[in-house]
Length: 401
Image 1: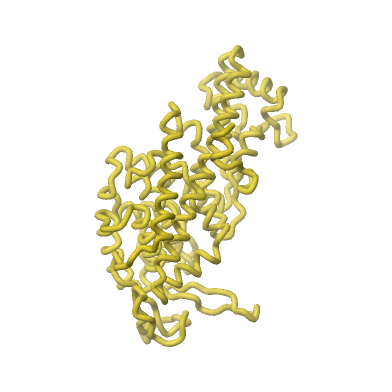
Image 2 (image 1 turned 30 degrees about the vertical axis):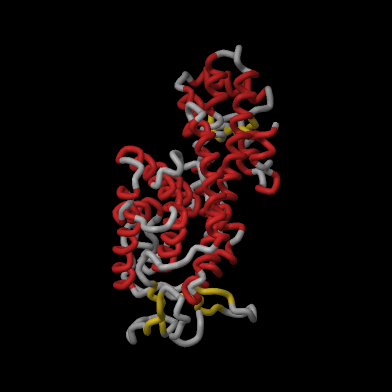
């Protein structure tokens, strides 16, 4: 935070004094202006927007050619939940969310994220993919689905806007202690700003949709309307706004991975908008992230589809239970025999025979080492999902093959 209260005139907000009675380790908070800002988009931003739209169009076109994209690539929802959770500093993985008995608070909240994304996407599909169907009611319901009530002195108030101050800390350069990096607006001002947020989220303005989404994400993180979970809600809304803007049909996209890899630059650029009005640097960063993650999602989807096609060809003459399980492992790649029976809608003996066949062929690996309550994982499916981004072929390389 800059010293004093004065900010250069291009900045889209101002610092104001905190209430004298506030229990806050800072004397000021930041109050952002209403959306939209008046800015001239730089040539770099305009180019980044075009590249991002191209990558999103290629991704959406790929899914439209597949009969069952939600079934084939439903694991992407878990991938977004994993990456979003890791932005918050946890080590939760897709496997943790799928494995039975993994019920820590971090894992539960990551599962909540995946379910909230699915539920909100279904709501948009039912009510219509339109920005008019995005609302503060939806934003609050996302928060309520995501968060778990904590102790009396550490309660994120699921589904409710905060009633007091919050602040963001950072490590001191000396390495000892922490200092205040940023203080969002006081609670009453935050609630007021969210009214403008809803209006702009529903109507848009003179800017391209992706630029609008970047501006809205900045505004939500700056206003910080909730006591906790603002980042997770903001990252969820990126996906939902892409769907509501009719840019994507399916929620098979995860920007959280880009934010996790570039966390320091992400937070620095948000602060630079606050204090310097540097919208173009933020928007170029955001749009480059959209493009990178659309390309990564396309490549992972292409690899998963290629693997599923190979499995289907390999087992085209196998019993129905085996063929059904081959498809099911792309929906849930970690399961017990009883869960396999539910997935393929057959008896436990039929599921057990199918599991044994795929285990003998190396498609499945037993994880517990026990004779009872055995749990299996589809190793190759998880490998594609978890492969480091540096090891993922580019879309051009996969298309050329």
